[in-house]
Image (cartoon, rainbow, N blue to C red; front, side, top):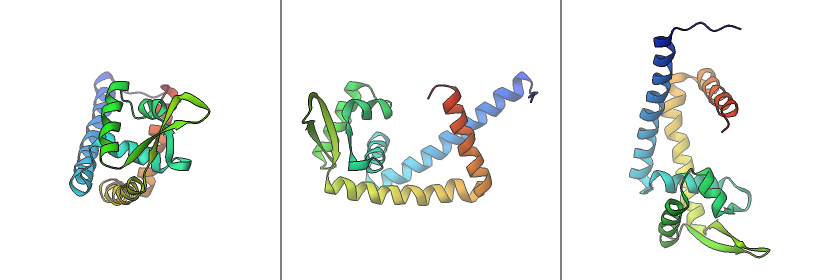
Length: 150
């Protein structure tokens, strides 16, 4: 299949993708911050942990998946520990590895925030697009992630 799009058209398409994502993400994170007092990085880490079996993950892997530098992740993790959302736990088989583990409070906040996120996404993505277009958008983004090395 040959796709024909002139330079301005394809640049405009990509700009619309970025603008749509940024506007939607801004509204989503604004509502999550308002309801739960969670910064975007904290929310992302909570979601990753609550969706991981055992609700724990090596801190270096979590930092990489959350696209945070080691120092940036340490600061976020310190704040999450202080808030009682996570605890650090050593790996009993490898002293070099430290896990970030959800606390009971962290699991409760993560579950509540995940439900709120789903409700917001239904309102801000699913309702305007409809189920077929929303699913097509997700599949298109999955394809781009795969072909571009994400």
